[in-house]
Length: 521
Image 1: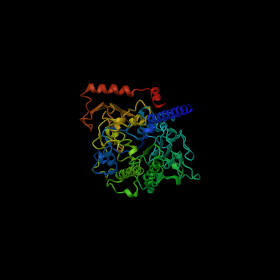
Image 2 (image 1 turned 30 degrees about the horizontal axis):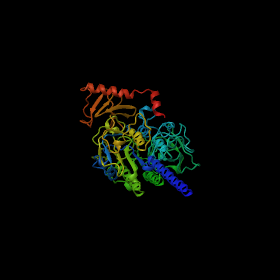
Image 3 (image 1 turned 180 degrees about the vertical axis):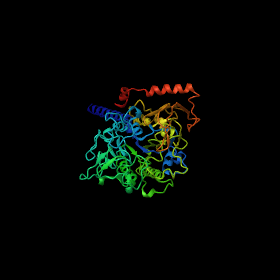
Image 4 (image 1 turned 60 degrees about the vertical axis):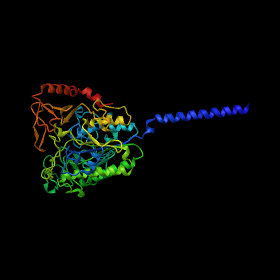
């Protein structure tokens, strides 16, 4: 009898242990994090790169083998849009998933502007942090820093780290604006406390040379608007004093940020990471490293595009060498369309030759015509995204909600659409409509049609020689039949024009209270 009791006790012990083990296995199977590791995400963002700059997008005079390889090995979008025809607004939309015109402060900012992303606001890096990601930004920021009175010699907050980035190594605004220093996690790199930095955008500091008054000190002459403090022989926008040991060397900037990006992905390869790699090329001043001088045959502007192509190739090589390429989604795009002469005499016009930065599109940076916002847009994921071409209408706005869906987050914004299947090449159905923006002016695309309202102002920006799309009448174009926007159909198609105006006003007519609710959590 005792033997039988011992047998039954042993039997039930083994049975319950087996059941418990199966339950644990089932629980692990049901947990997404244990079935598939979440992919790394890298967003590479060029600065002023036009639709026609890459070989994969039709360029014949400029060689971009690494970006072409990315495009041809992934999904190349022909209808991919930045949210604005200028830098700050597009960067705001990329990180927040909110139309930039909803934020009145989302304009081209000086180097002393306060942070324009509310620290309580949803952002792409914040969302990813909640999903276990380490988040980093390397490169251009241009979304403001601090609260309006920055002491550049102390910790600079709020900034990227306060809106979701665990790591940041940035330039505050643009390469042509002061302060001309790198800022790592809120502190100026290599700053000598005995040589404090002072910045002013209204008046110069006594005894400091400027491009306007000291042309003999310049290695690059200014054309318009860039004649204040001189750093490394280049006149800038704004006035700066001190910080000599912290000032960057322009020709080394691409190498500096590439090294930081490579170090970042290596340091975080064992956990999912999000890297926002914001290139400074081909924004002015165009200062290629000596290795790239003369390589394009198109002058410094072409050379820095070749340089940008190289740094992208080197980062992809690093991902491959570290065994991460098969588990990394790479997105490449540009913040707005191209501009040739944008403030300096740098042979960009004289050596342009047959190169067409905007491709077949009309306009460019600052413009409501297509070349202002339609830009190269590539998604690449080795082994996951089938190489091809997509004509789906997509916006950088859509990265927020689409990436959220990728990592099993339920977060979204009203302006950002879930285009994950489109970005992955599983669907050809993009968004149906999109509001386009350029320097506080907006236009509307729906399907193949684009409507541009009347706007006062010059038709052409005389400094950069770009058509701005300002006119006294409505403009209506069928992009399927007229991609170059040469035939205004507004007068002959009143029904379509009225439909476009009504739909546009329905979206664009948000009041300030609605805007605030959209921006915050």
